[in-house]
Image (tube, rainbow, N blue to C red; front, side, top):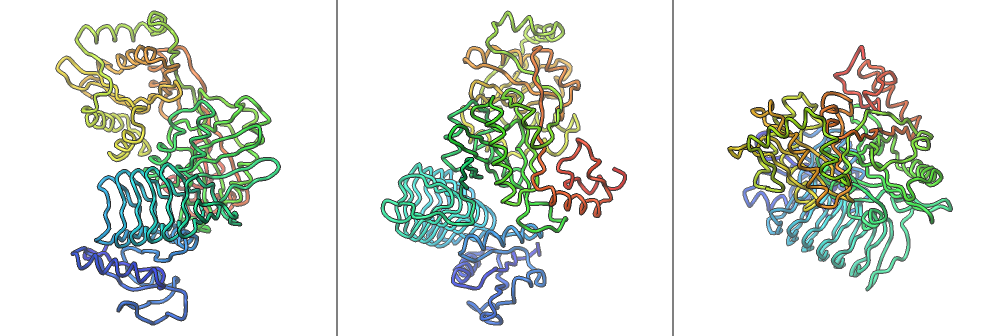
Length: 585
């Protein structure tokens, strides 16, 4: 940043660029510290000209020749805008969000970087708009909408409440999308159309009511073959929720959770949905660009599970043939999208045939996780608790410690204790979450998220944990103990109390997880003191495009002196080995 006004370069010099330039001028008149430097456009016809008094400084290749703080891709075409954003982002460029002073933006809505919000646009409460998206003149985005990345909501469009618009889609001038309806990725909705039923990805729909007239070739729409179909769908897709309704799942599979993780990890949250007449597979993933320092094409990417156990969900789950067929479709579609590798965390309790998974990649065992069977009576559960734990639990009760559920006035105490716990145990940065993560988690999961606190006799929070309840599974998500109470081990009372709470709520299992990084360490043995039941935590590592993977590993070795192929379990994909690991690894 320059220290003065934010210096902005506009990519593009057409009609929409003039609109964006006017937004910046209006913002400056309202006292905002922004400075328009000029335009970059590869069209030789505009080279050297002025637009609204600002010069066309050259073509896109000149972007690094002009000192600037941020860019705006002021081009209406969604595909071109997406390509440029991905390429420039990979090169380290920042993006400015331009919002016209007359736009009305709800305080709790979110507008992604690089967006253009034009005059008279309205974004209502609870709505989220992705990156590099255009909300054009006098469009209306009603409450609780999800508008994806690289979307164009044209002038006069009306999006009803709880609408989702997938990445890369165009909703044409004056179109209406009715409430509770979704528009898939890379769709085109014609001007004046009224969408009253959800549209799949990659279609062109026109008319009143809107009807699909064709699929757009060469895009991200669902690809269908005799063997089945595969599609990477965004979190707003109704097909995601429909798939979840067909099988047991955990909160790690919820689209709202993927949205939260995508924001936290600066990745694109998607799910791969494979379908045949007899089976389906839903796999939540975060798509990430290949590290910029490797200097590869901007459309190369890889996939990784978010934090937790978001294993592929396959229906039917125990059919080797169905799992095999679904994974074949996944590999075909992933390779078509230049996804080089995938790291997939498997759920210890929602098991899949490991031998079949091993046909497609390496299944790595990380350790075991502990779970409690909530169908057991209080007496049976108490007998399963080790004697040392029982003594501590009884001592805590005698001293007046008690458990409370869902007193959200204690949420700040939980966050403070969790952060202090991570610092005390020397956890990696991966386990540090900012306040927005926790607030998003609370808002998105609602009644499926529970706060358990253990209070001391003088009403201090001694230990606290976040737990989720989905499909009969109670997950211990995050937690910690206040340092002044460490010697008393108050978390033992928490897990003991959660057993009864979950059983009385009619839930099936309380999953405590394992040790740090999946290891069978002191933390694992602490948890195993509550139950002898455990399950394997494993991951699936898939090299989707071996040639690209090899190129990336060789490039990483050149840059760092490391030998990626010899990094063992510590790193996958190996080309993401941090430079600090460097020589001698």
